[in-house]
Amino acid sequence: MYELKHDETKCLACQSCDCLTRCQYMDIDTDTAKTEIRKIINGEDSFVLRQCATCYACEEYCPWGNHPFYLIVERQEEMGILPTPRPLIRQALQMGMPQGEFRVAEVHEPAISMCMFTALAGSIQGKLYEGVSILPSGTQEGMHFFCQLMYLHFARTSVIKERLPRIIDNIARHDIKELICFHDECYGAFASYAPAYGMEVPFKPIHLFEYLYNRLQELKDDIKPLNLKVAYQRPCSSRLSPDKLHFVDDIFNLIGVESVEREYVGENALCCASLMRGQSREGSRQNAADVQRRNIGDMVQAGAQACVFNCPYCFISSTERVAKNGLNPVLMGDLCRLAVG
Image (tube, rainbow, N blue to C red):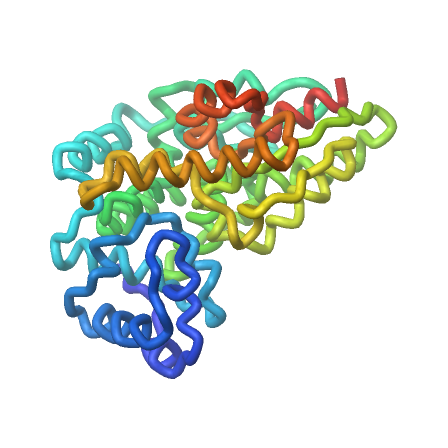
């Protein structure tokens, strides 16, 4: 069984407890944070386990890279503290279960994994993606490449530990040395979660934004500046790869897009709050509505014309709400495709 690599001494010696005191969904002072993190380490009940919004941000806030969010999810499952009602968890687990026969497809590098978002494979075309092969080729096959990290939101890390090694093996059987990850969560699964649990990843994950930036550099002469003011909706899974966040501004600079100055950006970003609406804690729907109101209101007030997404789930769940506020919702990849015609 894979075990979390977590250094308790670092947590207990930490004076700032940034992982909890910086949380944007719970108001926790330093003394309280120290008490609660000790409870969580010792396997005791804590209000943190019940009020966690599962936004992943504490993974980024921890100065030690000590995986506080993974630990929180471990304790939630051990103690039966479910962020979401059990029927919804059961349905989600069934939805993400690999089904049918797995077959090794003919792919070549550069290769991009669509994870479970095979319906969006049509966007992988044009000059930006010339020569790129797509993995997998169909909806049913998609479940054999679904990284499973979504189940962190449902306090089911045991499911991830069971399924993720098989997903990694399915990809490795295609004999590719590098894999472009269409979704932040896939990149986080291979670059953060797997190493945290001692899972071997025999290929190098490449973040989509890194690929897009490098490809745009190659197509620099074809770029026509878009002259847009935009706000970037940072997904929760981006917290697992903060070292890749700079590519957002790097890409915007290349394609003539201005990222508006606002409050909820970078480490201070608010999640899309869509999953919060279904959480079982009291007032979750009201809290989610408040987060969405503040977040989108911040974009509008800053003068953004469009809201740029990377996570397909954030995009699908927020499109209508964003559009009603006068913002054009667009995926980063599609924005880049526009810039190169």
